[in-house]
Length: 481
Image (cartoon, rainbow, N blue to C red):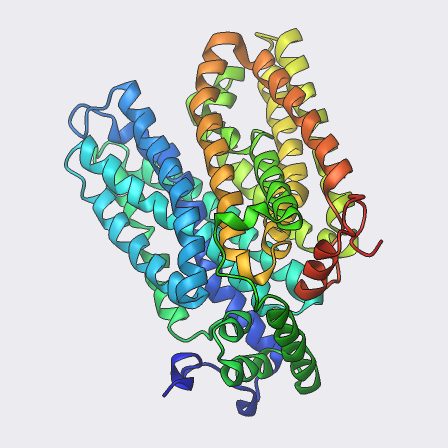
């Protein structure tokens, strides 16, 4: 009976002819529906809000509109911490199943909200699910993947996030144009998120639990059974021994708590995770994702053209993330991150320069659109992909949920402040100075990466932990030094 709680009869086992590679592919597709929900729920409000704000709907003031947008981000900040702790206690698979239910319930609540107050409450609950998924899904994938496939598997979650955002932009445009005269069209936009929530729950019911979490709970036989499904037999035997040895090293330590931050090498990893998370947000990526239409309108596009351009931004994000899946393996984490941040700074400075010197020009909106595309390519092909990957792999097993939770909490807090302050900056100092400010902030990120971020490509999670524990990552260049 215990085995059936981990590997259900429906999951494709090795003796049924499924290779480890195919099993890993199935696990990746199913788990990353959490990323798809993450992306859709953060992007859909962009198109739904104007319809929602109408007098015959929720009759929103600008301040209440801001609360509706930011309530999800605030919920996500807390959800990242709660989700990380829950994943450590109850398991990665069980937590994702719970989050799927929360996604569905909060989506229905948002769809049927009769007032703005009810909408804000359910958006906060939806944020808890988004934040929990942003922590638990990468952690689950990192622990299921072999070192040579870990980068590809985790970045596929990032691909699903941007795919979810693209689908939100696309369905917003289709429904907005087709049913725009119907005030409650926003309810249809929100309701569509219920479909992937159901698919995530149904899929995860058939998935195995993380072998590393099982080993941490003393379930060695079940952990080995999972590894045999996703590894070759001889590799599974070696890896289970590595996990067992690693757990023995930590057996004298108490359960992971915030007191663990007093340990220097753990504190260093947590600060690195926070730095990576915040650096990903201060690029301004979510300012473009939340306010992309307004940016294009501010540069000179009409409403329809801006909406179409925003869908184009979604397409570019998806394509760039596909590229990132290959680059992170071919180039490595650290050099790709530095190159991407350098390209982002160049794009931000260029947008600011042309917005200042060509204000009112007929060519400005097209220049801004082209530079926004350059920005998204650098962001999605490098910074976003590497950030989620490294946050998932740098933390040791015992504090992985807690560490990722703290890092992603800081990410969502930074996201909250960027989302809240961007429209104020845009209206107060204009497009040019807003992007100059973002470029200046991002210079700090490049310095942080150069000094402190190590290379982790090709190393197992246990080796990464051992190198950090041995203080061999202080140079910031490579864990192999």
